Every structure is written in structure tokens, then in C-alpha cells.
Image (cartoon, rainbow, N blue to C red; front, side, top):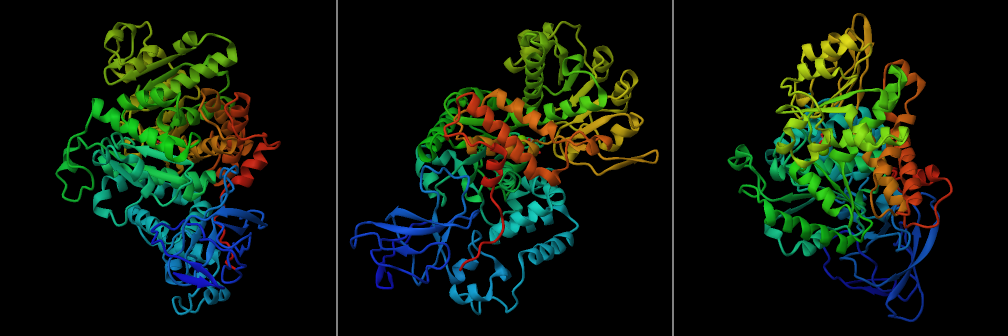
Length: 640
Ligand SMILES: O=C([O-])CC(=O)C(=O)O
Ligand SMILES: [Mg+2]
């Protein structure tokens, strides 16, 4: 309990950082110094306060009437507004958070470290808690980059980045945004894959929300333990198929954490609106079950009804807690669950499967761009996939859909331009009975073929796409075969991380004598072949999902529709410049990603309005400008 200018604040011993001010009936001025000032709004004790809240983008202050909810803990406190342009404006667009002094330094949302000004140090009880020097945000970035670059081992860089995220969120995001091409491979594929494999031994502080079988029956309450209440995007995995690394159980948590940091850095979603979730139903990975440092349930995976019930409880608890506009991104589920979950919840929730839909959209964009280099329309090409799982069949379906839209030819016909090879060989009609349902549309008339290279020679595809999760499968013979009947063979080696890539960039260029149009899921450094430098593109979901999610959020979309994926692909393909094409690139550089994301978001939002799936009305006139204005900026705020 403390009192401020005569107003009493009680201590409800709340543990999270987001709280509302306690009731106040008098004018309260300093030290409510930061973004809020409390003024009188009526009779003493009427249960509401008027708070001046500063908008992070416009810097204008708006009075907000707030219900009295809870209180601040001990000492004189300061009140900070959460910057939240992408937040639902129909509810109070601000969360008030409270911290000062030592706790302010320990709060990653608000900590600025050495960038706290003299004045802020004075008013916020920080004197003596920091050395005397005051440095700029830019200098902090420079210093952090210097220290991260001193680590030779990518995993050490990853750990340094995770520590920074836990220490100073705005510095973490500024670092990531300003150095996106260098740091993406650290916080994302390929390094995040290694981090998940070793998650138990490098585990320091928990990140995200762990929902295990032990939480069955109380997921609603577990969600309430999360300190943030206004969640807009959840990335959830059950860890069964982490990248191409297989079942990593509970240690898959690195993936939702990594994906959500990209939602913020690349798509501008507020960090506090992002919730990483790992559903732990056990693991079938023997190494992990026997690993003394394993962090998950030490049991084999629950399946069937037990699995379905836990997922169902989770899905409904999410809707109950966060409403129907929260985006739930399924990530790295095994095929057998991924398709079913998407079909099951696609009509009741705002769900998106990044591995099926995000990959599809990014690859379609790359193909649209590649046609500028190769010529012909989509339907004039022939496609062969290695891998008929989530990614492969997802991409194939979106290509077939786009061909059908472009030509008016029915989907059943356009699918015939697309062939697939799985672990049992070419998918052909004679295998129909034995095929999983998601592979059946791709079973065409052809005699059985076992080997990929023979399928390539027989089908003569113009486009070869690897999506099997198995590395080193595009052999010299395969690439050379592609190069014999194609002037410019399009070859996508999509499997992640780098170790699982179907071939390397160097192999693709040298085996095709420099003629391949190549892109990969994980990044490769530029390659020199015959005196020429080839920079290949990264056909990675990270181009699509952050902007796609932003588009859903700014329009208040309640469902995902395939047409939104198609416009996202178009938006991405449009961002490839003549200069990029001249270098043989079919994806724009990641350094422009926030601009790209805003364009994708605008197109997705426009489609949501067109389809009647948007709830935020009226529709903003200039959606690109609106998307940009909604994006989180990591710039420090001044705590006056
Ligand atoms: O994370 C990535 O780089 C792409 C992806 O979703 C996967 O490979 O599962
Ligand atoms: Mg994935």
C-alpha cells in the first residue's frame, strides 16, 4: 500500500507486469511521468480513472477512462503505456504497466540499459543502478553486434540473442531489424533447429507457454497464467516434426519462439501480443526420452482421442480467452495431424498452417517471379515434387489453384501438371488404395517408378521441388537430368535446416553449369562458378507469414481463405525488382522485409474485406499506409 499525492494505492500482490492503475479520485501528477497521468473524473471512489495515454506512433496523448482493476506493488511507481497500434481499437487500446527502479531494469519490455537518460535515471529511481555513461540505442546495437560476432559458433550467437530478448526487448528487435540478413539464420533456420535439438541443455529461462497432458482439464486457467492478456498471434507446435529434424518433443518450443520474434521483427506485431505455445503430449524420440536434461514429459506420444481432446480443449480455451480474432498458427506438426487440425478448426477459428499454407504461398511467389526469367505461364510448366507431405501437397494445391484461376481450367485438370515422388516412388494411380488422403489428388496415370532420377527422366519437369525433409536427395544425376531438357531448370531445395537441404546452392549451380534458377529453404552464401557469382534466393516462409498475419490482424479477419494466400504470393512476387532479376534472384532481399510485409498485409486485408471476412470497419482507404502505421517500432520511448 502506498499513497501518491494523497491517493491510496493498495497492493494486490499481482505478479505480472500489465496492470491497471488503482482508483483515483484526485488529480495525480508526477511521478506518473511516463505516458500516463491520472486525473480526477468524478466522485471519490467511483471505481474509474481517467488516464492520459500517449500514442507510440503519433506521440499524441489521449485521455482514456479506465475501470479500476488492480493495483501496483510497493514504492512509488511509474506507469508506462504499451505501444499497440495493431491492437483492437474497439477495446481500450492500451495496457498500463508498472515498473520502476531495479524492477524497471529487470523488465525486458521497458528496460533500456545504458540508454536511460540522466533525467530518466533521476525520476525512475535508477541512480546508482547503472554506471554513469549514457549511450544511444544505435551505439547499443553496434556494441551488441560486435559482441555477437565474436562468437564463432552459431548456437552461442543464438543464446546471446535469447539472453538479449529476455533482458532488453527493444534492443533485441532493433538489432534483428537492423541486421536482419545476418541474424535471421541465428534466431531462425538453420540455428534454431540446433537450438531445439539441444534445448534441454541450453535451457536457462523458460520462454512461451508449455501445455502438457498434465494440464488437461485446466488449460483455460493455464492461459491465464500468461502475463499478457491481449494476444493477437499464437504459434503452436506439438514438436513432432521440427523442421526436417523429426520429433523433438517439448524442445520444439524454440520454433514458436523464433517464429513469433519474426512476427514482430518482420511483420510488426507487438511482442506482447505474441504467444508461443508448445503442446507436450510426450515424444517418441528415444534419445530425448533417455536424455537426463530433457525438459518434456518422459513418455511416448499420446495419440487418438487423448491427443484430440487436449488439442480441442486448447483451441476452445484460446477462443474463450482471446476471442475469435486471435490468429493460431500451427507449426511443425507431423503430417497426420497437420492436415486434420487445419480441416477441423478452419471453419471455427482463425487458423493458418505455416508449413502447408505459408510454404505454399512463398513458393508460388518464387515461381511467379521465376517465370520472368524462364518464360511461359504457370500452366505451361510441369512440376515434380520430392516429398508429398504438408509442404509438398500444400504447394502443389496452391499452384493448381492459381493455374485454374488464370486459365479457367478446372482444378482436377490443372493438378495433372503436377507430379509427386514420395518414399515409395512416383505417386501413380495404381498406388491409390494405399495412399494417405492428402496424396490422392496427385496420383496420375503412369507406370510405377521407384527412383527420383527415373521419375525426372520420364516426367521431364521444368520445375523440381524438394520438400521431403530429407537432405542430399537431389543428386548430381538428378540435377544434370533437369539440365538436359531445360535451358533454365527451376530447382527448389526447400527442406530445413541446411543439413536437410536436398542439395546445396553450389551443387545446383555447378551440376547445371550455372543454368539453374535455384532457391532453398535455409540460406546459402553466394557461390562462385566459372568466374561468375550466383546469389540464390531463400524460399522461406518468413517472407509470407509475418505480413500475412499482419493483414489478418489489421482487417480483423475471422477466417483464413486460400485466395488470401494467392494474393500474398502475388504481393511478394511484385516486390522482386528488375535489379534482383538481373542477378538471377527470384525473391527480394530480406533487408526490405518490413516494406514487403506491409504490402502483403495490405493485399491480404483487402481480400479479407472483399470476401466479407473482415470485421474492422470501415475499411481503411490506403491499406499499405495503414499496415505500415500499425507496425511495432523498436525505438525507445522517452519516459518523461
Ligand atoms: O522454419 C522454417 O524455416 C520453415 C518451416 O516452417 C519449416 O521448415 O518447418
Ligand atoms: Mg515449420
